[in-house]
Image (cartoon, rainbow, N blue to C red; front, side):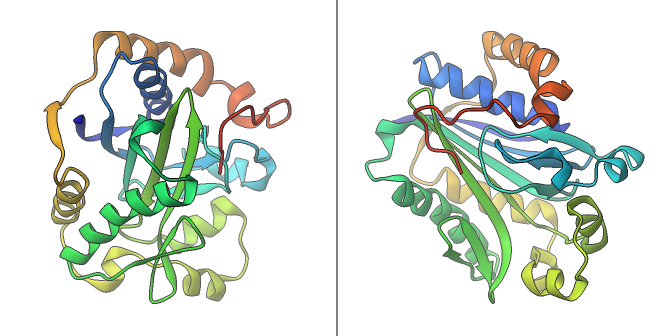
Length: 250
């Protein structure tokens, strides 16, 4: 099977989530190849889970500090995305994953585990979708089944900003937070570029990569989704009225 790789880009939260949805629609309709993409968040942002209430996060702190707020297609709890972190998305027809939800998590996360291993960090998959090093989370991952596609995305913490994380997510126990979350730099002094290259090489390993850019149709759809959905308070701040439908959301 041929895959498309979209190399590392920096986008705001609205654009990042609009790209994921546009690719899910395009790939699910057979117009585009299965895609692996890597991206950073500029500026830093917090992504809310699909069903999550906006008051679970510190909206005033985010606005004051120009931290973006966006709602994901996937479920789960809010995630603070530091501008230094690395995020990936895998969007592919469900037919490419022969197993159930758990097995597809295991397959995709194994690429991430192998990438970390190559830079000397041993991570294990726990609780279905968390990668942990010495029992601390270094990567959270979420998945949705939409439009006959698997959409899985996750963030690898490169450098952990505990104070901003606590403020954004309205956490109060600093010791508990520092005992729960870790980062690449907590385990090894390594440049971000080296981490990215190791992760990328393991995601594309044994795959035929034939394209490396968005189509014009996808670009137009992304612009539309940013304007009409991901930059609106109605989508980002209102959780009521959202339905699960026939897809898996986590």
